Amino acid sequence: MAKQCEICGKTPVVGRQVSHAHNVSARRFEPNLQTVRASVNGGTKRLRVCTRCLRSGKVVKAA
Image (cartoon, rainbow, N blue to C red; front, top):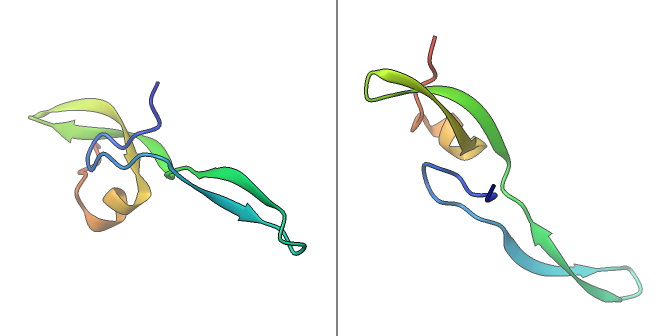
């Protein structure tokens, strides 16, 4: 299963981890995905959604 938000399409981005001694290694910044039951077209569906979409109200949680 892809680590991608089903609403905004946010995916992991790559960057660098830099230690105090300036040793550099690759790392990934993962989106904070949550599985929620949301109302979609009058029915309920399980979605993997990032927390920014939850906070901004782009997703309506099912009761």
